[in-house]
Length: 309
Image 1 (cartoon, rainbow, N blue to C red):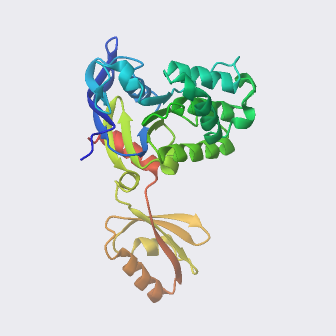
Image 2 (cartoon, rainbow, N blue to C red):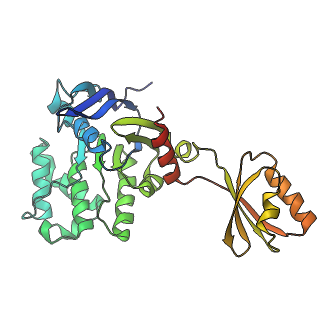
């Protein structure tokens, strides 16, 4: 098995007497987008800041490509690109000037900086603003500049903290596309409290609640973790709710309008077949039946409540 790009072992951190993060463990072994999901204050930014060497953890170890962050921070950080929740932009510089500065503090070879700046501006779609002051860019383009500074030195590991926060819908779509392109060549971790971001971007999810890991798995595993317990049916001849409730296995019925119903059940086995048979017998004229997946919001709430590990 390949050596993990990132390995987090027994990570815990506290501010004063309060533990912000407790015993977090995970390995990243391949490229893709990993989502760190949790409510505001769950501990996401603390984990990201520790992984990037911004703050030193109370307990545990971080390895970046096998390099211990605590023992060799400068060497480890050469493999990391970081976009904090508040992009570290210098508003009085032009885009080009700022990216040259970003390359220099990454200790890039001075002979490679000009080409690197041109390449990253092209990749992030900001080349046409190269001479514009950062303060005069829109929020979406400022976020692109922030992402550009995080990848200018071509790190293997990129960390993005709430990368679409505060953007309008069009800007969000543009930044999502950029993040997907970046993840084709490197490992990306992004934090978010927005479940739609997870659905749109992530291959793998960690869910953090009150500083603890309560879920780790693929998007499909997360979305399907709680077994669906509802289905939606459409009928051309709508019956009284009491008749639907009388079908064996139905435990609840919600009218949705236009002869559509949400049907809750205790056991899915054979229920659809029973509905079809009953519809024929009673001439309900069933035209649609579909099993509903639980929304990510529901899964989020249930996992938080159960505090699964």
